[in-house]
Amino acid sequence: MKRYRILVWDFDSRVLTLKQEIRDEWEEQVKEQHRQDKSRTEKALVTQFGAQNAEVKIQNFIDLDRKPFSVIAFHNQFFEQIRTAFVMGAYYPALTGACALGERILNHLVLSLRDEFKNTAAYKNIYRKASFDDWGLAISTLESWGVLLPQAVEDFRLLMDKRHNALHFRAEHYPHLFPGHRG
Image (cartoon, rainbow, N blue to C red; front, side, top):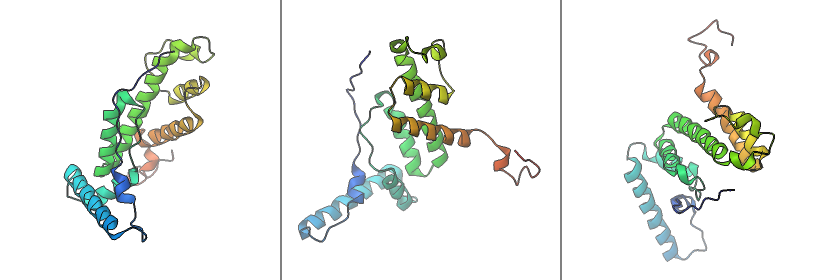
């Protein structure tokens, strides 16, 4: 089995400064240092993401929570772009980007690992394909190989549902445009 060594990693914990509440038992000097750190972090975010709707952008940044240590080394730049779109309030591009990245990761995993699982029942369903747009097949294949943890399987299936709802046009979502349509 191939092993990948991640040499470049990415982590952003600035949100911890924004979320940390000042505690009564802290010394006054510590409280003041925290206020200054929080102010510097907010100013840095405004510089990074822009002053217009800064409060919303800072809240979006907080809502995303800290950026995890990355295990998706080949996809860090896309992950960062998705996070940036969300913070900026570009929610649909963030969602479609997350869906595209999810599909890319599933494809990367299946294509990179399939030769290691030639003796499995799932192999016959994927050995000739150059890419996968059937998320269910990719997820169930990786699950059967024990590559995805149960929580990752659940999360990918949830993202698959969100992808289908967000990317596939459905007239029933627009009753004012298609009044007679019943789906």
